[in-house]
Amino acid sequence: MSKRIWNFNAGPATLPLSALEKVKADLPDYNNTGMAVMELSHRSKAYDAIHQDALAMMRDLFGVPDNFKILFLQGGASQQFAMVPLNLLGSGKKADYIITGSWSKKALKEAKMQGSINVAGSSESTNFNRIPAQNELNLESDAVYCHITSNNTIAGTQFQTFPATGNVPLVADMSSDILSRKIDFSGFGLIYAGAQKNLGPSGLTVVIVREDLIASGREDIPIIFQYRTHAEKDSLYNTPPTYSIYIMKLVLDWVKEIGGLPGVEKRNQEKGDLLYGCIDEMGDFYKGAVEKESRSLMNVTFRLPSEELEAKFIADGLAAGFGGLKGHRSVGGVRVSMYNALEPQGIKELVSFMKDFAQKNG
Ligand SMILES: *Cc1c(COP(=O)(O)O)cnc(C)c1O
Image (cartoon, rainbow, N blue to C red; front, side):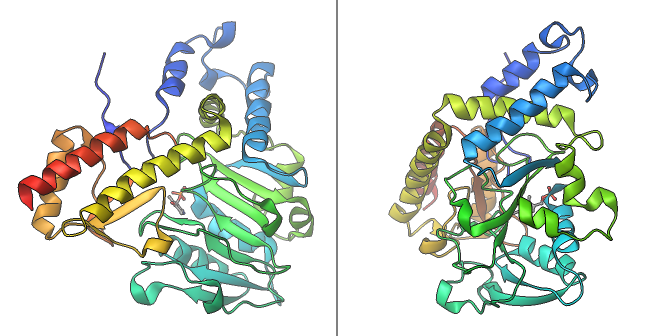
């Protein structure tokens, strides 16, 4: 039996062991088909059952209302940066963008090519260490949508409450916190996420979009980029990323096993309490990189007293079985990504390593 490390990679990221073991058991003969899942036709009965199960489970577990479609696309969240404004904007239309990190900035850059964009709020002046408050926002009442990045994977911030935008629907990049907490869909028009953080392997992008926005989307853009194309064909217009969808379905089985969204939320809170508790308790040595009110439960960023100590922390951590602790190059320091699948035990062990390391090096 090979040894698995505690994997704190930011994405692609750790997956539930039970899902990986099921993948292994299903190779090379899935369900007596005589084929592996990756060899099945996307038009076959065996694959269709996986596809429909994955759609139904996502709807059920995340509480997606009936007036939203769930799409399985490709091209990552990065493609959605372009597809959202391509479908929803156009000449004479405007959108609000709240800028909370480098992913928001990339989304903004694409949007500017498709319509008139109002930056309704930004925390760039403080290096994205916080989420702008409601009273700092400068929202346009005639915007087609307001775009946010719900969790900022690099900086380590997360919207604790979502902006109140009146009748303007929120469009959210939830790549790094989808299915990590309960969402009130009434404020949202569209949610998108690359699967490789909280849902499964890379290659799959989940888009959850309100039907009226699909219907009002532009028709004079390439067919493959129109949401309606994929909505009308249940995401089988072209060959979907079948293997990634199958693995996501196994991840959703696991979510169900641990108590669905309430179970996930409880675990995430428990992990957050442990790790932020340690950082606060040892504030002379570990300094949280973001404001407390904006702290993310998915990506925890902190600094040590010197860059030398940070390098030692990361190297000693790896030797002790903790991988992926290096902060993003734009922020530096340490980043602990602890998505849904990261077991609380991993954080317990990391916290004890942190206490030990501070004692020896503080
Ligand atoms: C990882 C990430 C992205 C980029 O996703 P791709 O699937 O690589 O395009 C975008 N936004 C956020 C918030 C992310 O965490």
